[in-house]
Length: 605
Image 1 (cartoon, rainbow, N blue to C red):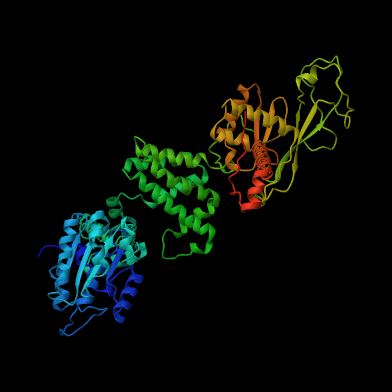
Image 2 (image 1 turned 30 degrees about the vertical axis):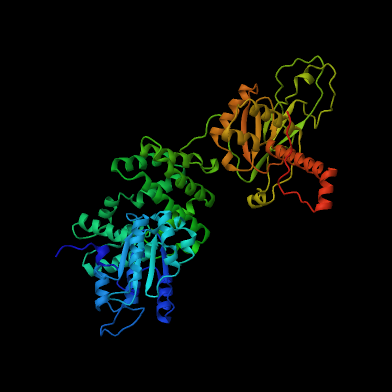
């Protein structure tokens, strides 16, 4: 006897053997028990979830004669009567299956419908099963509409499709529709264990878990992969052999990558990527496995109790990585892994694309969590502790009119003041060259041209409060200067992309001849590369300064000023429209209303 593949050998013969489609089985069982039978059924769902199988079981339930030949319509066909055996073997004359993918024209459908005028020969009902019904042409659909709506009492239609959106609504309205869902990996794994036990094939839980995940919810795909794995493993299923067959990435590689990304260890990331290349493992599978691990980490971070599955050998490692990586960074990495899979086909080498995706994950890591192995650029200033902020205490003093415009003298900190940096004051050239300058008395006996940057310990801002209620715009003198500078850079297209966002979203909190201090609210903007490019753009614009960026609350940034100006223009435009006499007449006499969002200010050069 020739070998029968597992997908055919273990096809369900009755509703009790159906796996993973309880909602469909229950509805059909109750309908058959109560004799509430519809004349047309439509089964939808992805490949290999049981559409054809449930159609054959339904045909047997309608035509079953019982072991004694005296049975009637039943929800539990016997499987031994002439009708049940003939339907299982595909030779029941009153059960017709039409493949609409290859018989999609009006002539084929017309030939099928011509048989509808004849009563059943062997069974109680004629059953017409049309598979992949969405492939029929428009004329074919139109030809069957009348018969589908009012068929003879002995005729039942069963339609199946993987794409119900392509089925005309006139057909959908005539059918009782059931959606067969993709099966969960746990359901597939349990069924595979049952099948392999019946076949006498030893299998490890890890191998079954890989096969159930690779099936993507399709039981037929799972059984076909199992057939292939049995042949590959010489009659047994081991996790390593199944992983090699599928080209799946070992979870240890994924855990090493996530751990290295959490620690900012770029060297390990590149080494693991090269190891994947040497072993010939799939780059797409790597990103897919990383997405799965990051998703589980996000669940553990949101619900810590979800980490306590004793039956899962990976649960402990998932919990460790979840504690090692912040929740927001987990979400960022997950999103980048999903989008990175679409880039693999665009690159000439998928492993190079994989390495770039992994390095991108590392590049977008917040600076405060960067690894010690990745030193900061020489141009960046030391990062202050989260509980510390810098403030500038300025003191002004008179400068004689005849005093030379040379470098400011070294400043001496005031007595009792905390230690800090001594910075010279920068004054506009017009003021420095003016012979008549206002005189201000020295403060605390200190010279005029000194600025002392004093670190002051303050309570860290609450990120949650900053996100939900941003501080209002508070214009400052430094904000005026920074807004003009950034606007000039943008107008010349000197800054783009992330550098442009850094400039727009930052606030200039202090500046002198050589150092400018910016403040941003989001750590993701405070990247060394963006800071260096903004600094280079300022150098090209004539500002030879060194930038320092801190994270904190921002009350005056170019972005806030632009938003406030746009809001003011919008308000003025709405006032003009609402104050127009014609508009008022239309609203008063005819009940006209202005569509929200339809008023746009006109920006003139």
